Length: 352
Image (cartoon, rainbow, N blue to C red; front, top):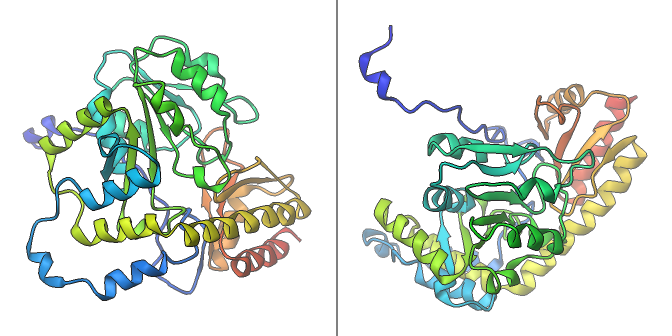
């Protein structure tokens, strides 16, 4: 029975996040989390936090965090927007900038939240097919549009695009806002952040969930021209002024300041990733040249869906999508060296 009020429900197919198993005795390589803890100074903040502050609303401007980010990236405070994870930031950006009747553009193989947000906000969209090597064809983004978004490196492929190619797209779309989702940029890529000084329609989005080991605290941020950031803040303060709690703001600022620990952790993940590529190749896998904290791999003879299920039986979780073009690929998060060696041992069993 359908109730009359259901005629007014906004129906969408929701995003499906990576599985978060309750069993702690597993090797979790399915959600691109960082295998190392946050900066040690974050622990100190939590140990010494004055809980009496919890009775007060947090700073709506997230001033301490915005200041830390602006100093780290040599920006004005007015060029930084923070939100509850990069998902929140991107959602707010969709709501703010994608209000044309023209379709927004993004790749056909990419972060699967983009079409969900488009449906939620009733934004028309068009997907542009990646090339066979999973790289973007820049010509696809030179058609009429209401905005553009894509990750760099892309997810789930891990493919990194050049700054020159990105700038070509931005230059060709002066009438649209172009968003570059740089969730994985710290793992070997070069950020297009310097381009915000040349193009006032460019929004660069990053996160603390990957390279700064703070997925559980939900911190994302965007950087762009003062005009773009002001528009986003206007929308934010029209929806919810107190989006980020006080503890998160303080811990996030502390994590940004500990550059030494950040660099050490990122370099460990990069080293493990490159080692893992060699091991996977020895086992008969092919993969893109990932510049992220995961590897997008396909075996030459054994189906990815079968490998995924067999790994799960062994309490090793990776990510698999039964979707066109990628239904024979697994996305494997880079864990510690010990975790990856256990993965390779399990793969040897499965493949023999």
